[in-house]
Image 1 (spheres, rainbow, N blue to C red):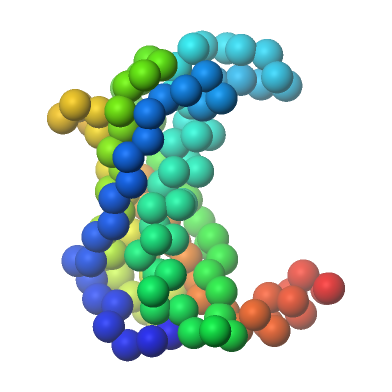
Image 2 (cartoon, rainbow, N blue to C red):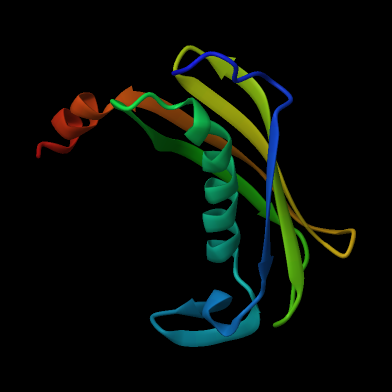
Length: 128
């Protein structure tokens, strides 16, 4: 990884809740609200935004863990701002705390762990 990544760095994304983000299982609608699955995706995506500028050409990040607490619903059309903050760097492991908010209301909190590895090592792990 390139130098410069530090605890406290942040990244944010904004999403508008659309029907493809609704809670569904096996294609069947459960609730017409922002799903936990979508929230996890967005938490991982915003955390990845932090590491992208620091990856070397031969490196890639992989998800190592996600914890999430979905605390409030968001209906279709709601704007959700997801912000990740680097809390810890340990070798090739980056931890971020993540908050999802809509109009100042907390929607979810979590932590994302990413591991940066050489692409060759990832290929080896995947057996391809």
